Image (tube, rainbow, N blue to C red; front, side, top):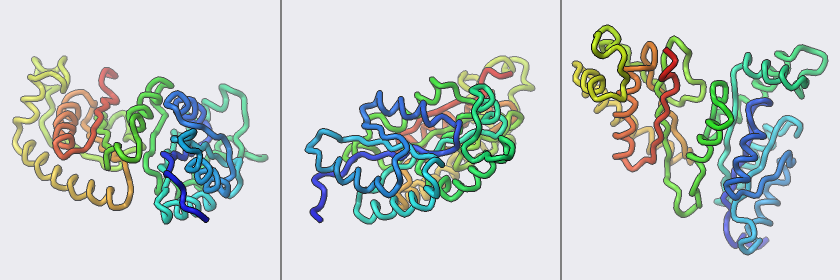
Length: 294
């Protein structure tokens, strides 16, 4: 078989039913991708080969896969390995959400879960989560849509995939997410940093109503004993992790930075971490998940 004329920018969209694959597919269409829904995994390699020989007619390909393709988890992982061996490895986007959110979404549209069978809706969700566990672990980017609106999901996808030609895209992209522990951990985080060891500006009357975006709060947080040393040392760790991600062909890193309420310390520290990552040459986006919830 002749080698393909040019490898496609290929993305596989998968994840839990009800987590937003349809929204993601529409977003990729708007970004200029040729989108194929529910293609059997065994045909992905053939489709990539054909697209690579299309003389520019197809330069971006997105394939949506779900459990309607039975046993697709094992098959898909084999396909990804085969394409990687041929230097045509696709990126894998995995969408997920909390069980309670998925239940509510299915109830709103009055649909059964594809793996529900004669059991309850939660049984189907649990079965699918177990089936996809291995694939989730190998995904390039995991996005938890539990607390994201349709527009926020689109922005996250656009941030990760806009301008992502094989030649021009950065080796690694990072998202730094500030959050409040009282609202729960971000489920899509690769790394979690706890900054509750720093004094809380909430107890300073003149700082209470401000946020970590304000200079007064930022100066207070970063001026505390151990804050700068912590950032310096953790940045060194991020260098090591980033290099390892690049070697393993993982293109996305999500760093979650948490304090009690997600308003002061985590916001200020997230901004600082983002600056450090940018300084390392890593394209970085900052998301303040819980800012404004108090």
